[in-house]
Image (cartoon, rainbow, N blue to C red; front, side, top):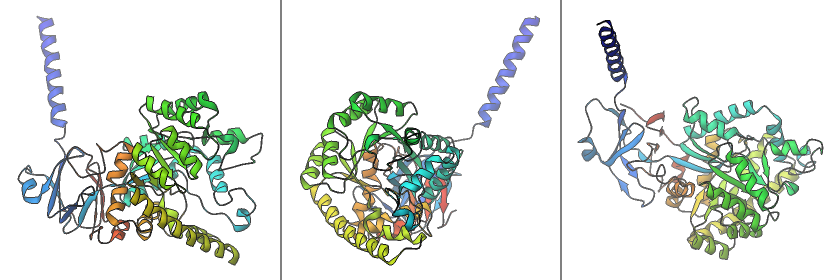
Length: 456
């Protein structure tokens, strides 16, 4: 009898606990976003007026306001964006969130190899990794507030700084965009294009904080495996005329075995050809890409990730933090003008070629008077001045970028099943692409990050 009473009490407690837990579970989080216009970047079509129904952080339904409203349960949260234009969250496919380089004094520039960049990089490497990640958290939040709900961080993050930042954001500990983290860049350290002639007693230890050495095909595979230990999302390789097709092919093969894509930093025609021959998934920058290489990339489905931030006078802008001599100012201005002409010609060849392309800011610099997010958005007017139509610019940072990242099933469009990552601007970004520099509403995972329009 006592045993039966005991079992009954246990069962009662269990039932009570289960009932309490079920009662404590919150119902599905449902939000209805109403908006004047909804732009589909892939087609260029606009739905007006439109509504997006969101449940548990994902898009459940998209359509006309009258149609979607008919399916809305009572008590749903409604966000009314008035006459604004709604788009998918922006994607920066090439960024460096754990680096914030300030141009050093001119006298320092002229006395160092890679004088504008190397001093800032070395300062970042020798500082505390914890401090560096906290800086990254600030810059990530600023990117998100400017509408970048997804970013691909491609190096200059220490050993695992971007991975740690990604995980902290995913866990809700800090606010920021979705991050695809690459960990350390793979590079040939015997001919490092970033820093040279370091103290020989310390050089290897310094470089290992930022790069993984590629030395032969076996070393190439091992470098990928070392990065895999830190749970990276993508492999980033930096090559000049210093890595063989066999080495890069080994990297690509090993990465693909692990279901990771390979992004190759390549600017010269020779390095671009090496990346093409090795079967890279994307070529970053591609400054000196030839028409024949563009055709081959199109045929092979290799993406070109344009980095347009430097196309229109950016170099002079970041030197405003220092006193610049007339000679350097004139040299920078001349370089900017030559860069504008090269960029315009490159953009037209890319558009004509039919190659798949996306865009990334390559932002790692302190931009006077701007947050990191505001600095990142400067790539939009820059691309437009280089002759790229506004709709192609929007695609380059939404649907095209999502495909390049292999995340087209998650982001890059406003459609059912995808993450509820949305932005809104006041006007028509196709008529005026500068609207993307002034995002008024940002939502990530169905949660409002910023709303300067209206909310009910």
